[in-house]
Image (cartoon, rainbow, N blue to C red; front, side, top):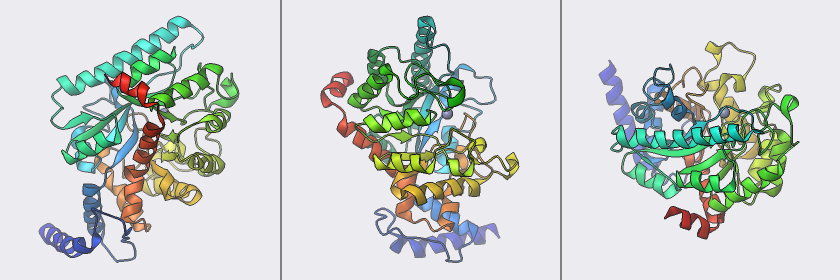
Length: 386
Ligand SMILES: [Zn+2]
């Protein structure tokens, strides 16, 4: 029976592929209302993932390198290279996450800097010395992502969740050299750069601090993307007022579905991020998606509701995915990197076309990243590449 299904799927794909034109994907071919079975939808999703570049903009795995016996780790967690291959996930931004400490104390800032630098280096060492270079590689530009995809390797981009380790602008130069291509300005509470989304309890600056403005300027001179997830609404509006390049929300969902979750973006904020050419990468943590349902009911459909909402509010050019895997993310049906294609199937059923999915899975994020590179000061970044 299974063989018959497999043969059926192969036959269907043979019939579909000539006019799907997936490699160019321009015509935005859709597959809903065609009476396809789930297996047939999965076969279509397989074909799409083979030709697009799929990127998850927020995964917390590197932080668990220091805790190899934890439930979440590079070998036991939601993200491993074999799982990524199975799920058709080409790459991800792998974050070094920092808990917020006492940013007013120099020794605490120094510790944060040391921890961040150490973890970035440990992550590189893990890949190079762990024997993973035949299956994965580091990318520092969209072009390098495309090269790795062509080689059949997983794409790793480094990033930092929380600007707490940034003591001086020169620290940014060093993090850039270590491959960091976005920095989330804060975590949930305030730091030396801005206020976090736990606004009522911890607001210090009512937006961006004087040092924070310099940090944003330097990041954009280098071509490091500014990530506005986790920051307060006041800080977000300050960023959008001064930014010289598009910004990303690397893992943020919609406030409209969960009004009390201040980490989520309002519809106005979603529109404002899109207005500067940025992208909203929807997060999958169940606490962002709903407070109405128990864990076992928070599934891919609910996640797709948030994704569809960003699409409706801002447009298909401004939406993507940041799972927060190994950091609290995951829903029933997409609870690890091996299950990503279930989301593609859900979106196909809702009428998303091939070109829409190419944009969603990485096209939009790569466009923003390239624009940030194009708007950087070439002399600074080229000098630092040496
Ligand atoms: Zn986060």
